[in-house]
Length: 136
Image 1 (tube, helix red, strand yellow):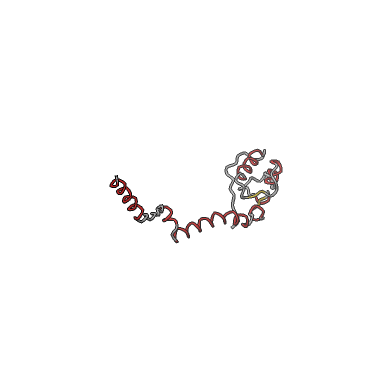
Image 2 (cartoon, rainbow, N blue to C red; image 1 turned 90 degrees about the horizontal axis):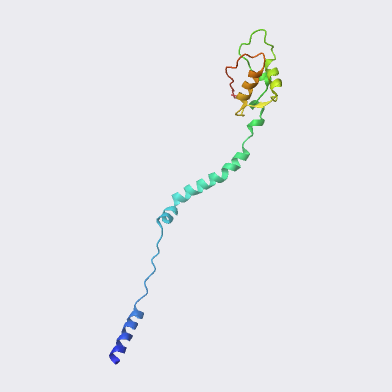
């Protein structure tokens, strides 16, 4: 009996005397890749760009309000009208169609609206093209 009880004590004392294993720190590859100077600088640049786009968009000038980007009936040119066509045909077209005097050249539908306005005027037989030219 003494033998059996003595062997159990030896095993317990051996286990208590052995040092504890040191914890192994496992870092993920993504974490170790991201926290490098180059990747951090790129991430900071992307974040600043995303933040600054709305700020810069608010500070840009509004071109819709500038007179260079507005057009009225007096600035519309009609290519070689016959002599019997009234000289104020463009003004008549704008008034008849209900177009405002100063239209924005940046409006995407301006060409279609002006073409439709000319097409409905009784003095116009056909509309071949309507082109917008922006200020130089």
